[in-house]
Image (cartoon, rainbow, N blue to C red; front, side):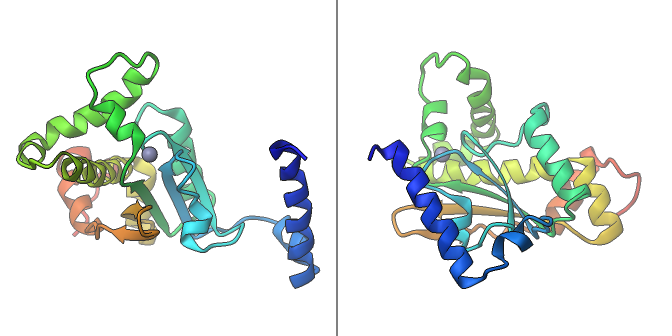
Length: 215
Ligand SMILES: [Zn+2]
């Protein structure tokens, strides 16, 4: 059996396993999705959203791209956020980066990467915003680790800039936005403890789209 064929064998076994535990499993799953979490993470094959969160199908709405970026002209991620907030009513939006991110590393190399240039340029912009802090870290590995963390925080800020999130939070009190980094060296998620309300208030000075005060 080839690795490709093995997938279908795995899939049949997985489906049987679910039915053994709960004969109504797929009947219930096929009705609708009501996930509380929207997860925006890196495409890296070593960081599978549901597995690291310990959540089954139906519990997390997922968007992944190279280096977990939230770019305001990316129709894809903006549609996911809009649908997640306005239709699925997610309570939490998580941006999850990971240490050892190839996208973050590639972004900082002095090389022409073709179509990836404009995408990864977002990370150079993050670096420029935080150049003083990052340049002060002499150890290269530690500097990349910190850039991964700062990149996640900046992408969270990009989410908080959207009208969908600002309006929903003002009216309904959710979603809140969280900054995480997955460490594949020990399998653990680090919560960077983004202060959502303070970040919102701070960026509102420039990016308010609601015409209302948060206080
Ligand atoms: Zn990555």
